[in-house]
Image (cartoon, rainbow, N blue to C red; front, top):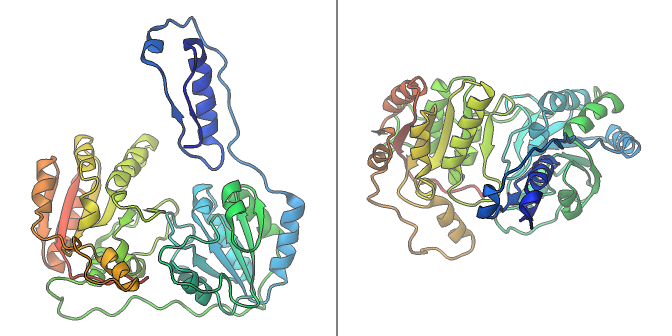
Length: 411
């Protein structure tokens, strides 16, 4: 929590609400906790007129930003890493303009919880990875790395290495003082990412003499005859053929995120959400939150929850809320009957055979029906595409359970 407070007197409650509201919206926006004693609710209030407004953007130091721009312009082969703060601040279009002016390679920040750059853009080179070694290896050959709206860096598995390749330096722009303070390497600048990116576009020099990055590898070729059970790439390949262009993805199939990225790239702002921490059970209620937020804003688009059968169990009661509100959510649950991500970690840490990681005998579709959702089991790509197409126009919540082969996570 950013702030936790309990007013000492009933008369202090209104002002506490005002402070809580203002503090929650300050960058980085986040939750606050206000505890109101039960008897305070019974106290009469004649009126409260001290309602305030508070800005939620902090402009970067222009002089320091200009210094950053000079260093970026002088770079021989820069890399841009856009993190979730960039999209959250509305900086999607500005990020594209900056990358194109610099002709720089663009990477997705590690453990990305929001995409901030179109993943089908010619300058996009894919995600950085999730470990110290993977990130460093991916940045090899770049003399300057510019991280905007992200930590330096989030890591998941422990695979030791150098934080940066030799001969590479780093610049960071973030709206979060704690993220700036925690950066392991590089020089940091505080400020709203969108504002900073828009200013940088005018400050940096043209990069027309730089060599454009090699085009990213396209999705793998799938077999003519689908496997049984299906593989995750076959599932994502099928979904790519029927996904509506305005659909939003909420992902918590951790062991298959690399395959999801290959076949279902994010190409629009505010249309991809994932867990930032690796905690399990986030995506089912998160999809409900995204759909409710869309409804409140007057936005009509399907929400697609991509989730593993293990993750689905942790917060399964959220689908009752989705059903009660007739939310346009399609959960695609990949049923591989195990915790693949934890098995991959066990192998990484040389502890194979950890007990309790198999999940046989769970009838997910029946559970979903019990909570009031439309639910189906599918085995083939044809069935998946047909049921998904029906689900996105159903006007309610659907759970599609598709049998898949276990997939070793790319850690």
